[in-house]
Structures are given as C-alpha cells and as structure tokens.
Length: 250
Image 1 (cartoon, one colour):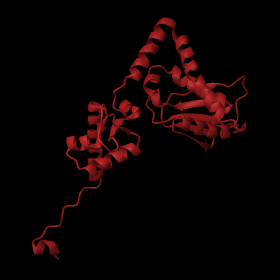
Image 2 (tube, helix red, strand yellow; image 1 turned 180 degrees about the horizontal axis):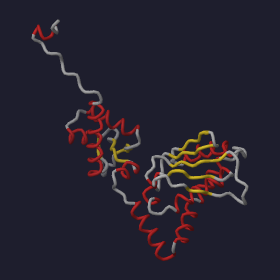
Image 3 (tube, helix red, strand yellow; image 1 turned 30 degrees about the vertical axis):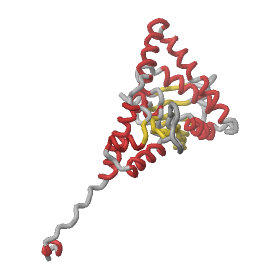
Image 4 (cartoon, one colour; image 1 turned 90 degrees about the horizontal axis):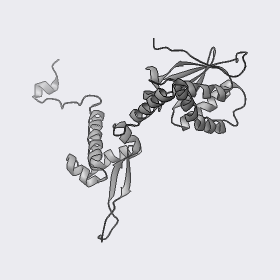
C-alpha cells in the first residue's frame, strides 16, 4: 500500500539526525569559547550580537557553560559615572577552560625544568624532585584517611575518595587477587611520559598510604586509559613497603 503522504502530494517533514542538536550546541559553545579567548570579559549581549544569536539562545549556552565550570560571571566594571540600575554582567573563561584551550604551556615549562634538573643533577635529582612534589599530597591524603583503619583494601577505598577530592577521579574495587585502585585523571601525564620518576613517586605514596606492597599495572602517561594500581590482599614479607611497576604498553 502506497504511503498516504505520497498520494496526497505532501512530503513528511525532515527529521533531524540523532545528535544533530547536541552537535550544533557543541559547535556554538566552541565559537563562544573562541570569542571569550579573543575578547576576554564580554557581555551576553555582545556575544549574541557577534554570533547572531537571540538573547535567549546565548543565555542558554552561557548557562550550560556556567554549569560545566567553563565560564564565570562577574559584574562589569564601569569607569566614571554610570546610569541607574545594576551593571551588566560579563562572562569570561575559567582557568580550567583556558588550559583546555591550550593557552597555557605549563607542561612545556615543567618538562623543560625537569630536563634541566636531569642535565645538571642527574636521575637522582629528578627522583628527589618528584618525591618532594608528592609530599604535600601524601600529607593531605593521610589526614583524609585518618579513620580508615589498617586493612589495606579499606584504606585503598578511603584513598580513592581522598584522591578524587584532589582531582584524580579515583575509585577502588575488590578483585580476586586483592584490590585495585584506578585513577581516571593524571594532572602530570604529559610530563610523566618523559619522566617516569613522577609516576614512581606517586606509586610509592600509594604504597605507604595503604600500608602494603603495591604494583602499578598501567599509567595514563604511557598511553593507558587509566592509572591502575594492584593492591595484594596480603603484604609480602619484606622490610618496609615496596613498589613494583609493570609496563603494559609494550
């Protein structure tokens, strides 16, 4: 039986592809981001005018970016006398958004600094630097784990919460051979790709905090999707905690 719409001469309205609206939103947000990079603090009206968007449309995008932590709003600074009413709000990119846009080069500076340390002081100097860098992190995590008890797996769970608060997006789980601590974000991944001493220092911190030998199975710095640390159920009979790193990218 032929389609009734075809018989009547009417064509059905085109149905937008799944995800088309989301794709358009992302494209518009990219344009908003670029404008804020170029202009700095800008009002919603100025952004809407530059992009050809209605006040309601630009507000929708800005509200979403505010919720995601990509922009922040401030009162517009007006020099000299101003009219009645509250000053307009201006919007600007947050530090995190600017970093994602590649406007800062902290990784390059850190890598250059470590290369200099390696040239002038050798590998041990890099190791000492890496150990020093994680000292404050270890102290904060230890304080957060104060009530975790002595069981390594319970401590790993508490450590995951502490690391998540530090921005590592961590979680702990129990597996057949013990426990597993996963970190889904690494703030020094690009630098650690060249200087694994940073990963080793962090793994040593994990070992001390959970109170047992641990084994690093994967790292974001070496191309893995997650930093994964294995925590055996029973600590090995050795003097002091030890750390083993197993490379999985070969």
